[in-house]
Image (tube, rainbow, N blue to C red; front, side, top):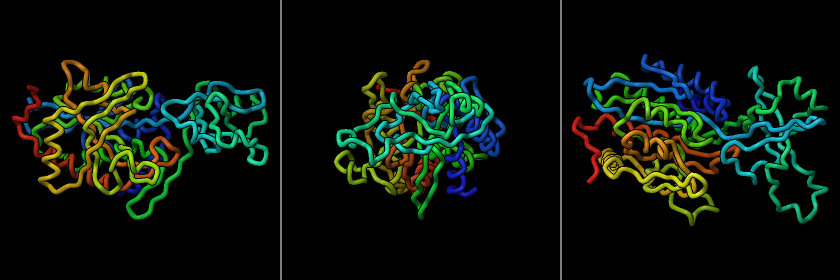
Length: 361
């Protein structure tokens, strides 16, 4: 597959947090093209390893999550409408009228839509109000709750955004670019570096449950005890009219290296990148004349937010592919930035010296 076909294929695969089996199978099969050392841990993380040029080499961990956000069924009404909880950071203002898929235990996808009060009878005071998820319902065309149950809908059934994919030149528009873009990067890294003489043992991990608690990748770090870790995820592009005052991150300007990340709600966690690791990425980009951007991320987290605290600590940094409309049913990104991300990480990993030290102080 070329990059567009691969991304289209991955974005169409449903993988709500906790229900990642289709993506686990897909990534395991794809990774196995490049190495025989592929395993799936107890949580579902898929880990592919390329050997180093010497047996005592440290491990470099590159992570990208396979899961997506969505909903879970919490109640089936007698009249056949379906109530849901959010799973992950679904923006409530983007829910109304959206097409979704309810997934059954047999793998069947049942098309549905998020109900929206008819415009002609919406009172003026409600026209600019967002319906909270507690009042949201799904309409799959069922006549009764019994019919919904017979079709395979149950309490706990996963619900995802309906597939959509389009592209024009280098720009792609799709559901779940967060983080199938990162999954493409993992696969291209393995393809580029398979058989290379590396001074690190390279572990590429397709992680689970990032959109749920952000802690799915912790098991990978416990297993591998890496010398350092890099999370490949999306970065909020601010080149749209509504975000131009936020930052200067844009499409086609290269990957974003985060210099500061903090999530103030709930977990109170973030990432302050290891300075040596961060600066080495900058130096690699400059030496290879590769584009890159500096970013901060206030209000979010990535896989390394938690894996950095495993064991004696894991020096970490985050790389984001600029993406518009993150967590919306359709996101927008540029394949040029995917190519630049792969080029930067490939060069960085090829050129790590055998005596590379990340010691502080």
